[in-house]
Length: 292
Image 1 (cartoon, rainbow, N blue to C red):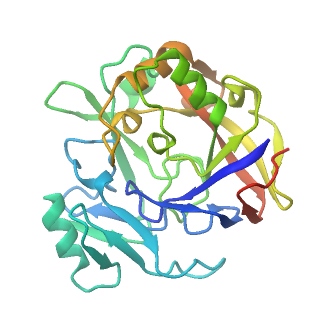
Image 2: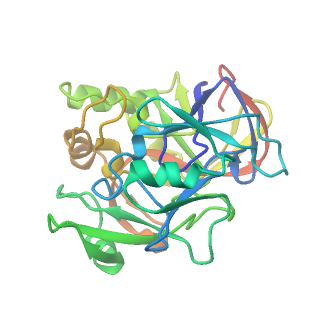
Image 3: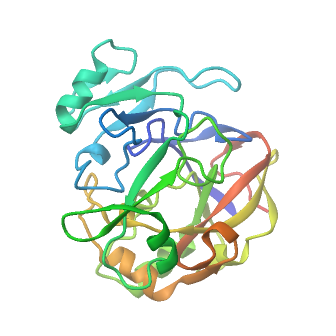
């Protein structure tokens, strides 16, 4: 198995960076999800997982001005707006500019507030998630009647960054290829899944399902412990760049790869593609390095 791609997302729910080489520490890719937008009215961290509230968010992209350094504060980022214009995160008018486009009053932040949370909508797709999880976490409803849940930021990840659940998300080209075979009219582009690491040269099929509980090496230095399969959500269906909105991408996962996750807090059957991991040893990783 080899490292096919490495991705970092400097601002939560914006497009990110494709890297040839990256440093990893116990919190994942250095600089990943270092920034986020805070909705001033609600105190919720903005997420494209509620697309009606944040329809433009995934059309932004962000890249670091300088490479982040392990142990230091994140450097500024350049944010590219949907119209192609750019502003730096240290521009004193950045919050006003972002708020104007997003249609809500937001603040760009680098430290999760006490008790920070994000929201996620549950689209009307059969067998997507355990109903008891949806019922227990629902905070409000969309005008479509679809439930919207609230979750803590970085629920199972080290604190200090704006992850949803875990520090590292890994997916294989074989999983994306298998989904493409099952639904050839849909595009299972890796951009829909926002992984940190993409692996090539694996066995065919949903191979990550069997890695939970195993510790493996990424390259010569980085070691990860695979913790639980990646539960998929509405984010994978959204339009971005040249990809159209397509809920069949998520329906296909829910129909063909429902996995029973053992983790007590989220125990039950979920629609899954990919796997989460903790970093047990940091270091540098490059595209083309081996995975074993």
